[in-house]
Length: 393
Picture 1 (spheres, rainbow, N blue to C red):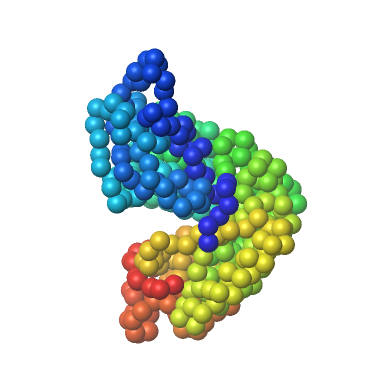
Picture 2: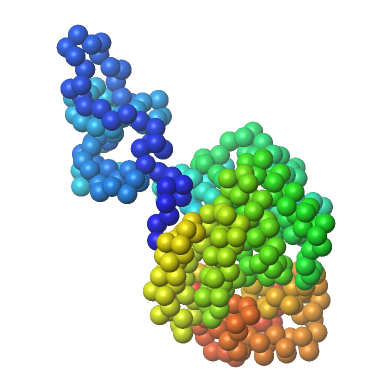
């Protein structure tokens, strides 16, 4: 499903060019400065939704200066793109480069894919950050060799400006992050005063350049947030022109319920909604996609500005800790590890992993391999383990 204009964000306006013909100038007009490069004979797809059209592209000073017929225009270099598509840089609607940009600002893994803009901040964002969050994330900073010198988006963006980066970057402020800033990692609702503080943090982030508020409701402590809490935070973001982006509360057995929650947030917060990596996870749910898409279309027809994106690949990736039920995460990572040392808790987790769930996404049910091997892996280590599996979900 393709989002509307503010999501597509391509089009000729983004190219920032004029459409020209090489024969447009009069006979007495001064000769134009030569282009540094002309990409000719390509099939141009400009992002407006229009079909491709044949055109040449003239580049001068590192920027696109003209699109049109440039076969007679002077140029220092020409590239024949005959039979190939020429398009603006792609927008990665959900990247994870907020820390790796500080390691390698050129981010070749993005550039080599044609990605020129990344949107990041899935539920947990790089800012704001306090000392408690800093301690929780210390191993990640250490792994990347990063010395954190920011506490809010202004500080983080200033660091990027100082060092320079190879792509454009935008970030949501994470609903999980503002919850951690105020409540910590516990499984409880905020008081009215605490919710006001959380809304204040969203407002501050929006003023400092965040593009909206996001949630990733599978990953603790995010599941502890109620729908009403998310609506309140989204209303604040909406006041600043932001959107609500979400990894929904379920992408498996309870996906239709999660979708209704997402639509409600958009409707009651009066905010545009983007559903990340829309899918019907788990073999039993693969046939639900037509119903899911139809429900989104009905919400759009009823006035809710909602759209979705999907993976462009079949791979899937997660931390092992994400497979553990949310209740076991109450209090943060240290508490989780403490619980995993208890044989009784491990037995309870093993039992829950062996059964489908509707109150949380039991992704363990989608992992291939004998159950005995899976549980043996859990017994051997409580440390985060990462792997990739292929799936049609």
